[in-house]
Image 1 (cartoon, rainbow, N blue to C red):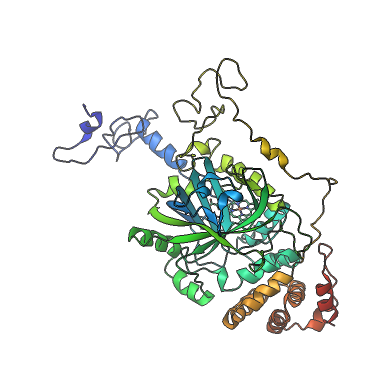
Image 2 (cartoon, rainbow, N blue to C red):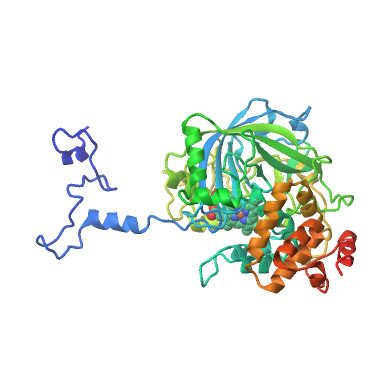
Length: 527
Ligand code: HEM
């Protein structure tokens, strides 16, 4: 081959020659084309204009949440069983069926609130997003490390995130704004008790759990469904940091968790997680004091024992951060046959939001990018064109028939699994209502009681530290909530702020909440 590009090489230099994106060798990458050595510059300066205008477009919008993250690749290996039973009894999803079956995965860890270059030592939930490149198409399990979430209805998501993001005027994260919102949103107590405990600062990404958080369904061959929740347990163990530990790291490193992950994989110390599934029958479960579709709740392990269904190993780092970590796109709508949604009101909102933001953030053809492609399945659609459509066949192998149905060729629908018609019958009035069993405090209290003494001390200290920067009415309402969560928590945070139970006894329950009998008993004791 006559290497056009090699024309630019100086003799004896074996390196490859710089070209522009049209394949033209670049003879001068130091000087623009000008009239005379001192200018003016000419407009027909193709290499210069291409170089600068591409640079101008180097950044895509960062994720509106979870902007800072780290991705690694590996495999998921199925156990083929759910406890002692074949897994096919509960799901027909291909990736789970056979013991030892491996599926390629990508896992992106992240923080939530900070920008792309922010510190990884912050108190913040961590994202735990897994993409399974299965033979039946991709499956994304987009979770976090704290098992629950702040809110249970997707309509509140922009509000909770705005309160946690920097103030739009001062551009500083402000406890007064955060707790202003949280104090009016009692469902967030369980999340707050987790977030302000040491678990709120995982020591790095390898030593944290992952949770699907929302409730999903499994579907078997007969079309029978069960409700499921997912948990990832790290083989490396779980480790957290206090604010003091975190501050020491942050003083010299903003990206310690990304570095830790990368270095572990580079030295062959591949991190591993085991996937556990909890299951309950697919109904409303009136016997429970919480709603199985409420993502502010966990399912008690003694009643719904988590069973291991497989393990995940990460053994490859990204080759390029932009194409594999920045452009990777996860979503809760990305499910394979045998896995399904539940009616969880967060899940439905999330499912709209992810692909919506990715069409804007990455572009309408984001699913053509290698990291997002369903690379182990066949993809054949009638979708064509759009910005940056790049595959040679423009997304389809039937150049003329890009519609369906057709008697002349083209794609046709898969045979519909008729057993899916056995889904639940739902009768109800169209309405806007919160779920009946909110029970906002009980699990938060149970979580507090499960903590070791040092964790409780750290939790109280962190709350007092944050709330002491808030207005008095916000402090009082938070102490009121904490007294409903657990006496010790309310009394100790109150003591730190100079607020006694009598000081808050006059507060009425919020209009946005439903109290349980137990909550009312506790309230009765305040005055
Ligand atoms: C990322 C929306 C709740 C976990 C995102 C992104 C959006 C979003 C717009 C950015 C996606 C991108 O640019 O690619 C929402 C909405 C929620 C919600 C509307 C509630 C209605 C949750 C919950 C969890 C979660 C409950 C945890 C279980 C994540 C993770 C990412 C993410 C892990 C980062 C994915 C990645 O690494 O690319 N979310 N989210 N989100 N969200 Fe949510």
